[in-house]
Image (cartoon, rainbow, N blue to C red):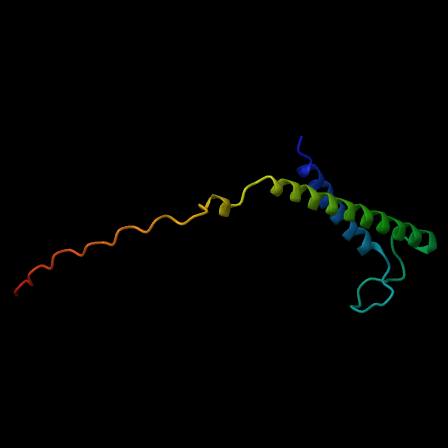
Length: 109
């Protein structure tokens, strides 16, 4: 059974969830002027801790799926042959030189 598509789907879902959780967090710097509003869906220290822990867990899972996908991709390519393996080791003997065709008489106009 090939796990690559399953891990890839999990990886994409983790990436989407990670972006969502990061965007839910309150902006501290306000560099772009977005986020950090006074009210919101979650307020207080407990909500901040929950989002921080959720971000850390999702980031760890994202790292593990990235590592797993890299290992699976490496194992897939290890068994295959390179197109350069099909090239013969010794060059073929040079072909006999081509004999030029007999010159033809010029056509008069």
